[in-house]
Length: 356
DNA sequence: AACACGGGGCC
DNA sequence: GGCCCAGTGTT
Image (cartoon, rainbow, N blue to C red; front, side, top):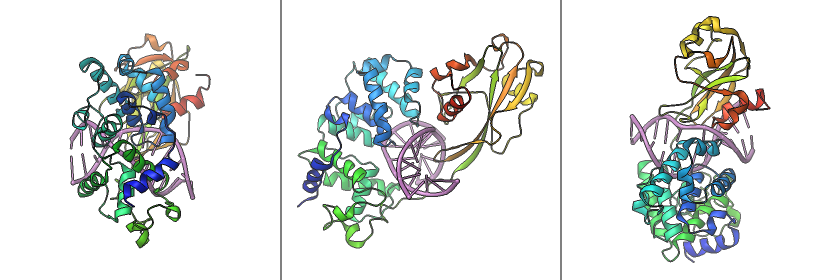
C-alpha cells in the first residue's frame, strides 16, 4: 500500500476535531495558521476562538486598532505575528476589497505569510497542489525516508520540500496535508514515537534501522544570553504609574512596560541619578526607592535568560504634574490590565496588584 | 546563511 | 530547573 493511502486511513480514524478544519474560508484558515505558527494546538486554540468570535471577518480585524489586536494576542508570544496579522488584514480589507489572494505565489506576498502558511492556505482553501512543510512533516519524512540531512540547514530545507511535494496526494491535497501534520503531531511524535502501533512499520527506514529517536537531525541552536532588566515602577499618591511602548525591532515590540534600565551585567539598586537619567525626574521628586523582589524574576526565552528586578519609586506630588525626558503614558495601576504587556510584566502586576 | 523572536509543556 | 518545540522577517 502506498504512503498516502496508509496515511489517510490513519487520519480518518485518529484525527482531532479542530474548528478550522470545518471551513474553506481563507480568512479563517489564515487566522488559524498564523496563530498556530510556533505554537501547539492546545495553546493556540483558545486564542483562535477569541479572535474568530471578536473578528468574524477580515474587515472586523482590519477595523480594530493594533493595540487591541496585541492585547488579544497577549501571552501567545512572537508578537510580530500579531502586528503582521493586523497589517495584512488591513491590506486585504482595503486594497484587495476583502478578497484573499487565491494561489500559493500570491499568498506569499502577504506579510507574515511564508512558504508554510501559503501552502496551508492554498491547499486547505483552494485545493492547490502544494505540499506543506513544517516541523511535523520534516520529522515524518526524515524518519520514513531515513533522511539525516539537518532539517534546519539550507540543504535540508530544500530536500524536505522536494520530498514532501513528491509524496503529496494530488487527488486530495487538502486532507493529505492536514493528515501528514496530524500524524507528526500525534503519532510520529518528537519523543517516544508510537512505532509499536505504526501503519508504516514495514516501510519506515528509521524504524527498520532503529533510528527513530535519532531522527530528524537538527543543527545546534544559538546559545542563551543573560540579560538584566530593572523596571522602575513609579507610584504617586493617586495610584498612577507610567509606562511606555517598546519601540525598535527587538523583543516585545509594541507592548507596554515600565521604564527600563537594561544591562548585560547584574545591576545594583538604581540611585536617584539613574532614575533621573532615565525619566528626567529630579531627585527632589523622589520620596523613596524600594525593591519589590530581592531575588530577580527569571524569565526564560528560547535565546534569552532575563533576570528582572522591579523597583518601587515613590513620587512626591502627582505624576501628571511632572516633566519627563521621554514620552511616557500615565495610567492608574488598576487600569494596566487594559494594555498589552509581556507575560513577565503581567505576572508582576498580578502578584503585586491583585485588584488590578 | 545566520540570527532574532515568546511562551508553554514535559520530565 | 533544564530541555524541547517551531515559521517568518531581518541582517
